[in-house]
Image 1 (cartoon, rainbow, N blue to C red):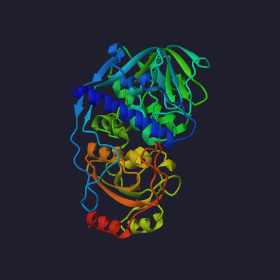
Image 2: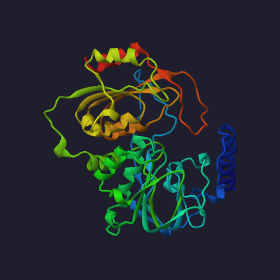
Image 3: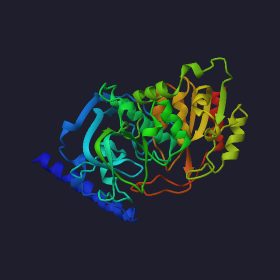
Image 4: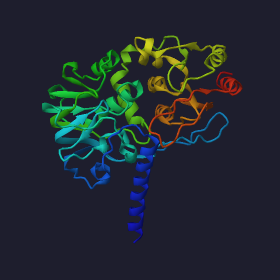
Length: 386
């Protein structure tokens, strides 16, 4: 009886959240029925190949500069379920996010960012088998949500999927017919794909304009859970992208200050904060202008940056290097905290006041700018650079 009540409550809660979501995000969207989401079904695992057993993590409590607990909006997760890859016949893959409909039209959220929050899923793109191109042979998808335009998600959520192929001898990348990647095509993406031994001539750049039906599709589990990136993810990416022969242990150790003055969640008092940092030897650094930001970070002894994709490359820093994340109060997520824990970095977070507060049920990140208290920032630097 109790289990039935819990089951009914769970469904009521998810349906309520889904309906409320539609009111909060009222733009024209495609909303699949809950019965058509694999996460709610007792799905057949016959198409699933496990390559990683369930794991437990031990992330300590994150503390801010006042030694108060940081209440992240989601995560970090202290565990991971079994992971691996799925094999689908005649599956539809669509959108730059690489969303998958199996042959029986079940949305495969196990491969998606929405595996932890299926009730939040909606799409501005309606799946359409009639207009889809046929991909003969075997296609591998490592596409992932938000990976189309975001450097951090491309590394952490897309490229890390290669590790979940598990070194299976039956999967040889060069023998695949197609490899689906989150579009649009970018030079920086191509460089990273080549570093991971992905032949560019087999790449299909997924977009909102073209959908594909795959004769045979390989797709992995979503690597991360609840915005958590454990050591197996960072270790895999370091092994692929950070070549030891490129490192020069005698090179000058840099202190980088990274700005965020454009786009959402800009640091409104950036100049004031930089002037304080410059007194401690920090120089302005823009990763997108570098020929190889991965090597630059590997040679840095300290990095200060607002929350954003630029902090992704902290995974390539040496152990005990200093990372100070400037975090908006309206966008408290644990991505870079978990990366720092995985790599044993000297991580600190300073939370600044956002200029507004977006609705927590909105699926899109906060767009409000924020500011950092200069006195607290100065105090933290004095502690770290006595």
